[in-house]
Amino acid sequence: MSELYDSETTMALLHEHTKTDGLRKHAYAVQAAMLASARRTGGDEQYWSAVGLLHDFDYEMYPEPPDHPLKGASILRGRGYPEEFVRAILSHASYTGVPRETECAQWLFAVDELCGFCMACAMVQPDKKIAQVKVKSVKKKLKKKDFAAKVSREDIIEGAADLNLEMDELIAHVLEALVPVGDELGL
Image (cartoon, rainbow, N blue to C red):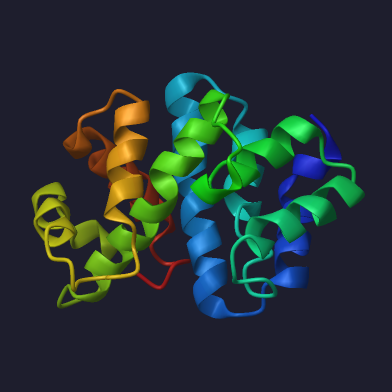
């Protein structure tokens, strides 16, 4: 596999453009969820992991649509990332109009917002541990519009539907992926 996707290269690119702890932790969470998704589907683990880690690497510098992720896409192209990789990242933001044509792109869209939501659910646990978060609790909190209000419930629902997964199954998948990296996430 290309060195573009190795963990040292992708982590260096993330850290070059993303300085805040919270956004880095989100990237680590999505990376873990994408790695689990690759294992589940037989996808290329290194590639999918890199997509997850780098999907928001430009967000800190360019937080407003459509700059994010379009500016990041230009940076990735300039670094030699192939168009399929760039398109997977572009497609996680529906407003780009880039269709989610690959399984990798579909999984990125499905887990991105849900990772952030599950992390928010962990933060309200007495011990703030992701391992204590239950599927039932996540589903209940999804119905509360004022809880993690910036998280798009519509994207989570659409992501599960695109993968033909029940919401319980997608939530369980993300939670299982985040537990092993809980310490890294501060959860």
